[in-house]
Image (cartoon, rainbow, N blue to C red; front, top):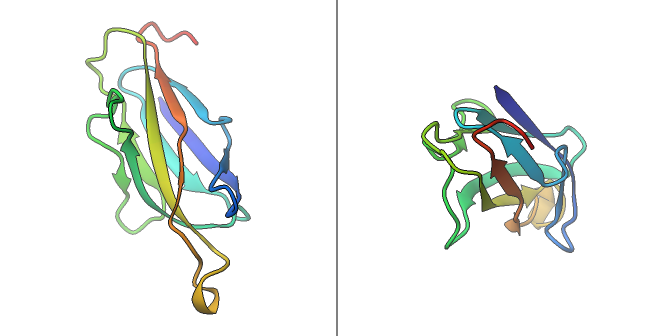
Length: 121
């Protein structure tokens, strides 16, 4: 199943993002997770998506920028057999601020992905 997470809003004062899944994605092993930038979100680009230090990495392969797109995609490791949560970071740049309207950043926001092999929340 494809889990699409849309970045709906951003706050350059706090670095916080408002995500369509409210910051916690529920997934099952093998799901593809796609992060997209909403049209009026204030986000110019996702710079990186990676697991937090000391957090379990639930992606295999890790999320990456899709060729020729602004979206990122990652696949939840199909071999996960126990319920687990991963704290990960989205590093992003804003559409406003910076020099000559080029945006500012980077900013970092830390959402969660919850993987339940049984497919329940």
